[in-house]
Structure formats: structure tokens, C-alpha cells
Length: 109
Image 1 (spheres, rainbow, N blue to C red):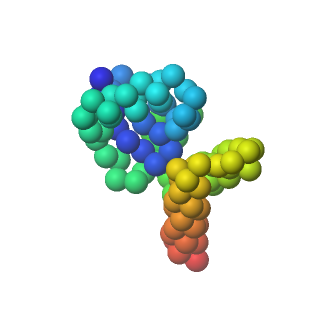
Image 2: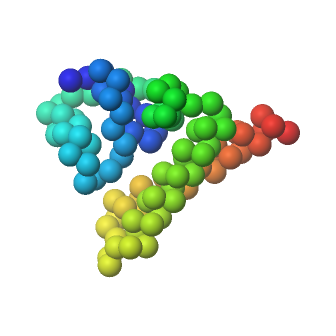
């Protein structure tokens, strides 16, 4: 199996999209694939739009980054005691979202 790594998930070679979700069996299989020493192809920080089955536009990327950020924050909020990895992931998502907002505003203004 080969994967392409996007900001919000991975895309399998056959076109099946796997969102970042620690409880998703497909994402767990991807993580195991990584542990075997495999490396995914890079989408250079792009966001994948599962509904459109293509890389997103700037507006779509900003919306997707927002959703990833909100999901991470909700996971931390719902956890009795969040792990360091969860907090670090949330901070990275916040930074990614902020960067996307700034890029989007720069393009619009």
C-alpha cells in the first residue's frame, strides 16, 4: 500500500481517503505501515477535500484546517487528562489554521 500525506489525512494509492482519527482502523493501519519504516509521498502541506476528491482551493483548505483544529480542541476538552501529544497536535493545528487564514486574507485583500 502506498499513501500520500495531506494536512488533514492520508490518501491511499487506490484513492481511498483516510482522515486523521486515532480510532479509525484505516488510520491505525496507516500508522502501522509507518512503523514498518515506510514513508508516504508528500502533498507539500496541501489539504485534501474528500467530497471533491481533489486537493482543495485556498478557501477549502482554510475551512478544512478550521475543522481539524476544532476537532483537536474538542478532543482535548473532552479528555479527562489530555496527553502531551494531543496538546502538541492542537497547537500545530492552530498554527496551520492561522497560517491559512493569513494566506487567504492576503489573497483576498
